[in-house]
Each structure stands twice: as C-alpha cells, then as structure tokens.
Image (cartoon, one colour):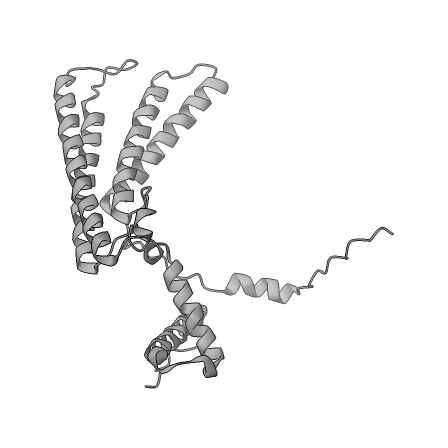
Length: 248
C-alpha cells in the first residue's frame, strides 16, 4: 500500500514579528583583524572587476570593445592571487598536510613544525629574489595593447613575496610563543576545538553529576564565557543592560 508523504507544517508568523526583525540592531563590524595586503587585494580586485565590466559593456553594448581592458584585468588577477597568498600566509589558510603530526609525539611534532616554518621563510625569500632578478631583465618591456610598462605589475608580485616572507616570520614567532602551529593543532585555528570544549562545558553544566573535580575550573570559566556572550547579544539588541557576574 502506497504511503503518502507527511504534510509539511508551516509555522505562522505575524506581521508584528516580521516588523520586529527590522528593528533589531546589527552587530558592529570589526575590521581590526585585516592587514595591509587585505585592503590592497580588495582595491585591485575591484579594479579588475571594473575592467571586466568595461570590456563587457563596450563589446556587447557599444559593439566596439576596448582591447586593453582584458590585459589589465589579467595583470590585476595576478596581483589578487599573490597578494591574497600573503593574506593566507598571515592567517595560516594555505593547504597543509598534517597527517604525519597525528602520529608524532608533541616534542618531535614541535621540532618538525618549526622546521617547516623555517623552510617556508627561506622559500618565499628566495622567490622574492628571483622575481626581482626577472623584473630587472624585463624592466623596459611594455604591455601589448597600450604603451604602459609591465614593471609595476612585477614589482607588485615582488612586494607580495616579500610580504609573504615577513608574514612567515611573524607566523613562526607566534607559533614558537604559542607552543603549537596549525599543523599540530588544526582544530585550534578552525574553531573546532573551542566548539568541542564549549559543548563539553554545556554538558557538564546541564548534568552536574558528571562533573569531576579536575574539570571544575574549566566549567566555571566556560560558564562565565557563556554568560558574557549572552549578555553581549542582549546589549547589541538593546534588550538588556550589562550586568556584573558574581564570583564563583
């Protein structure tokens, strides 16, 4: 006998509830975590978009395409790729192979990760030297469609590799100070460890009988953290005023 699919249940919402969603205040945007390469990449990206749009408009609307837009858009794409790579170095967002670190002890893993950080600095520094040498060779070469030198674009690539090397040094110092890198503890960088700790703390708060003395301090800390997050959300929405949490 054929079974009919269950009817969908749609929760009704009133117009007042819909109107209240527009009254909620938007959380302030924090741009302090962005670096110089982020803003440079954003500017070059929109310059590339403007060239592509201009090419599309002149080709399909005016039927008289500007040939130089395609070449400039290609060089802008090169700048976006290399400056974006420097951004990924700063945020440890490049592809990493951490399979071996799952089976190594903490001490050998720390030594190997530091060696990887050192090799990365050397590689980016050497690539910067190669780009500088290549730029000096073709310093007088002009673009194909317009009389504009290619040197500024290659200098942009050179600056990107220099920035990658400097960011690599910064990442290595932070890893040494922190005691681990993204290779050793990838969960500490993608937020999975924090989420797991928070869920464990919530479970212990809900089930006090499962709480042990060793994790008592962790539970208290995570409880306060949850209270602070809830209070901040209420403050942003304008529904509550900040309150002082009591000591444990």
